[in-house]
Amino acid sequence: MNVLVVGAGYVGIVTAVCLADKGHNITCVDTDEEKVRQINSGSCPMHENGLQELLARCVSGRGTLKASSNYNGARDSEIIFLCIGTPCNSRGRIDLSYVKGAITDIGTVVAKSNNHPVVVVRSTVLPGTMEEVVIPLLEKSSRKKAGNDFSVAFNPEFLQEGKALHGFMNPDKIIIGEYDRRAGDTLEKLYHGFPAPVIRTDLRTAEMIKLASNAFLATKISFINEIGNLCKQLGVDVYQVADAIGYDPRIGRMFLNAGIGFGGSCLPKDLSALVSTAKEAGCEMKVLEAVLSVNVQQVTRMLEIARKRLGTFSNKRVAVLGLAFKPETDDVREAPAIAIIRQLLVEGATVQVYDPLAMSNAKKVLPPEVKFCKNARQAVSLSDCVLIATEWDEFKNENLYVGKLVIDGRRVLDPDKAKRVCHYEGVCW
Image (cartoon, rainbow, N blue to C red):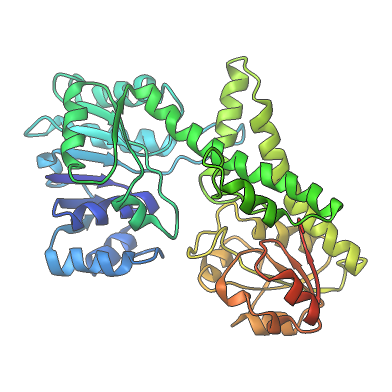
């Protein structure tokens, strides 16, 4: 199929590359000229395991992927994916300004289309957005009628950063929210051969499935963090507890690692959006409000532990290991480490940091007084205290911390081994 992917961010790039690898002819459109240049030269503009190699193969080897900063030639597209970011605004609501602009542009493509294209939104939006915002804008900008001249669908993504290629190629489910049957049939054809059940719903149900999924994952994390806080007070190993309860198929072990909480571009934003929407609808979401509150408190707990051990952060040298919100990515959006570093600076600490991949992105959001070290050993050697904020494998060597005060936020180190060589304490253990 001829497929247009609008947006060369994380979701857009992964979607474009994976579909191109399946043999579809993909054009990826983005307003960032540098991203377009990089993609067309076979270079990936972001880090994701295996993505660079696959992108280069699709661009240079198979010729199934190209990028553009305009929509010239897009009129032959059979499917148009919208993969534009939907950040939260100051009220916790999803900001649709980027989506609206892109939808208006897509409408001009639909207006000139030589066929009956299917416009597919992958961006996370609140229930009702497709019907109340996307379709009216498409009809207005294209001067055509949804269901008659073009079709519309919502196809949420469930990608995990660091494992996105495997997740796309081997999904546990494919959700197709369809405005009309033609949209669903076309998308099901596109995903033919993928080893996953296809679930076809109406638009609002598909929109809610995405949000509810992320809300549940976040709830698991905050749940185990609260259990971990209690376990620490009672002298219980929360990781043994998590391992045991994780054998229950009704619970599962994933997302039960106690520590300093979740970050990233999805879970915090989607939870805030759900809570805000519920308030406007007159519904209470006490569980999800608590999930957000606990997540903030876990960062505070790490700082409290370090503050208690040091007495004060003023004039202390604190090393923060890990800047990305999770390992195997360079994404620092809503990363707990960023909040930790900012508070350390407020309290007068000298902060030195290291991350294997996320240093460049972190420099864009952190104050200039933060010292970026060339490796973990340099950051640790100059410190009075070490805070481990991301579970990178290279931080797992206990000998790196000999004689240091170490506060572990991710259970990176084996507590028994670590206590033999350094002054070690975990956030929840």
